[in-house]
Length: 98
Image (cartoon, rainbow, N blue to C red):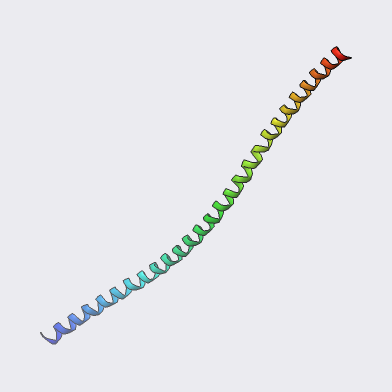
């Protein structure tokens, strides 16, 4: 090879190295963005876990609150039945023994 061929070959290698260096720099910035996104994803996952725990707690409280009207209704029916039975017994006592 002649000196000119070496110079041309060396110039091509230098340009190739510059191109590779440029690509490497772009990949470094992409890698940094991926790391930031990964950290954000981990943070969001933790927040979702806490939110799910909070929702489960609220669900238990709601279920407890839903049971209260049913319990009150049962007590009301029991009181009404007791009142009717007491009324009937009172009527019978007053009618036959009074």
